[in-house]
Length: 77
Image 1 (cartoon, rainbow, N blue to C red):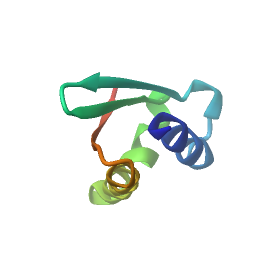
Image 2: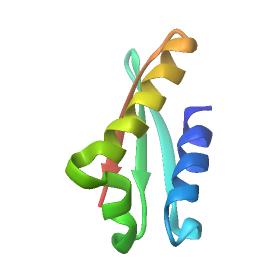
Image 3: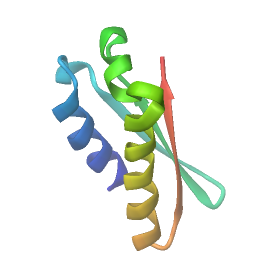
């Protein structure tokens, strides 16, 4: 479910939504959501001073808490 949320939000923010890749892995007690976008869209996802990345991480964290879990968002190059 978290991967679908991240994919939906990120596809709305980038210029190349077809290159958005989200993989969800379970690592012990936490869910790790790995996000990969086109290199030219990376700046849009990180945002000025990392604000956009912080917002996306907050969404993932909140959605995980509602499921009774812990989540980490990794933005990959």
